[in-house]
Amino acid sequence: MILNTGGRTDTVQYFSEWLLQRFKEGVVFSRNPLFPGKVTRYELNPDKIDCVLFCSKNYAPILPRLHEISDLYRTYFFYTITAYGTDMEPGVPSIDESCDTLLALEKLVGRKKIVWRYDPVLLTKKYTVQKHAITFEHLCARLHGHVDRCVFSFVELYKKLQFNMPELCVPTGADLDALAETLGGIAQKYRIPLQTCASRADYSRYGISAGACVTLSALGKANGVHFRNLAHKGMRKNCGCMVSHDIGAYDTCINGCRYCYANQNPQKAKDNFRLCNPHSPILLGELKATDIIVPGDQRSFVQKPWPPASGQIPLF
Image (cartoon, rainbow, N blue to C red; front, side):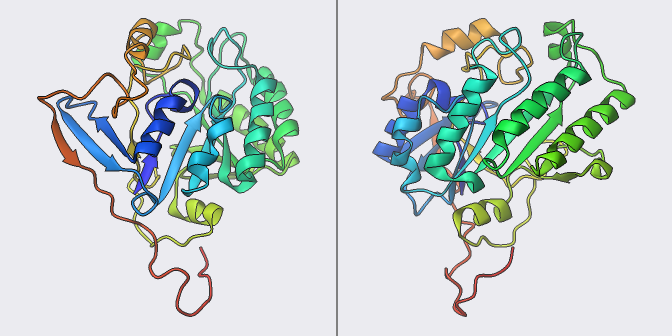
């Protein structure tokens, strides 16, 4: 199975102590966000976990102890660095601080395991196409040669976002095309492969590929292992990722990003954040006597035997 540590919250930035304790004890529980009384139990050992996925906007808190996980498990890292400042992302370090941390992460795990996420891409009177062009080029200049690829997506205009961000400009088709052409041209200049995330639009004319963020092929290449050829059903609409199992919890991230989809509101996230016990087997609060605990599906995707009997590494 693929274990996802950062799909519902920024576990690395705010709950590193809890995460490391879970790996130390070898077990973690995850509450179903739709059916709170149902809890899934996962065993944390290298025989049960094919790869550990990380997604964060600040890896600094975990870097000194990351080896406790990366020395034993296959790993893959998504690092989100955008064009926005504290007016949009109050709890996120500055762009250059984030770049410095990414370079420190690269020294520990290598370039092939790091994907830079530049998303969501949105427009306001402040964050224009030109502003994105300037910041994206600055980031490419710092990160080229240090990341495997860059993934971006245009913001989804759901009702909550439009309520929380009245200054948001609804992009036209021409706006999206201009952004894609701008980002694609800059990425090609710095030889950073660029792809869209969960998008049906075709921007291949700008050197932008369409694909999934999490594929067994990408995880295998980064970690020197061959996975079976399995269907990637995706995690949401238009997504082509391989299924992963998240151990985080919604409404717990206190980054305060105004475009956030994982929090109902900032205050609820702050209240829940205080409920985290680093020694609890579940991220938010404690297990309850009434919880229905079920074992997680931890079937492996790794091709057996490894290496292949022929001694030749199969192509991906």
